[in-house]
Length: 112
Length: 119
Image 1 (spheres, rainbow over the protein chains, first blue to last red):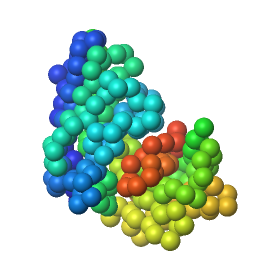
Image 2 (image 1 turned 45 degrees about the vertical axis):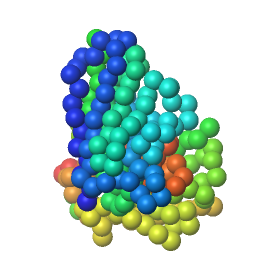
Image 3 (image 1 turned 90 degrees about the horizontal axis):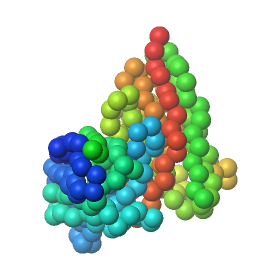
Image 4 (image 1 turned 30 degrees about the horizontal axis):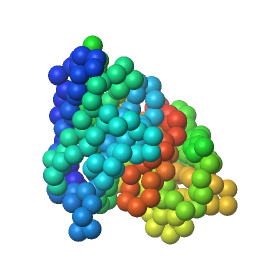
């Protein structure tokens, strides 16, 4: 199985500052078609997960451009610019290169 | 508007069975791969199973193979998860999720249904 490892944030993050969340996969997620099969989700407190980014760097419909994804085949970063109160929650990375689909353990974002 | 509404959860004794349902609306259900993802209390997300558009292909995580069965009824726009031989470690909120398109990323999620396995 592909293991997804997420880093922690130096919480709390001051409002208006940027936050970068890291995720590492145990296997390259770069497919032969040139796409990298890495997704990001946000789970706000008490809510269902919300889709943020797919193919490592493509924002899902309706997602603020304050969210951006980047990385290589095994190392990924979700950057949140100008953090706001509504960004609070747990962020998960997920690989969909192969089954079983696997998620990272989550990274909690708190705002000051 | 896409809506996914789960039902069928509850408190169940170990070894018993349960069937979860997910009613879908707001999109052409038969065109999309669907999945179940669970989250144990205070824990992270864990993919459980996925099913192809026509239902002919199913995929499971190892820990549920042989006990869980994912199915769908495209005429009723409904996804199911039959859970047999329930164990305490199956205690979780179960989310129904819609696949975005190619690959297995999930662009819409239900509100979740709680399953508690306890004697």
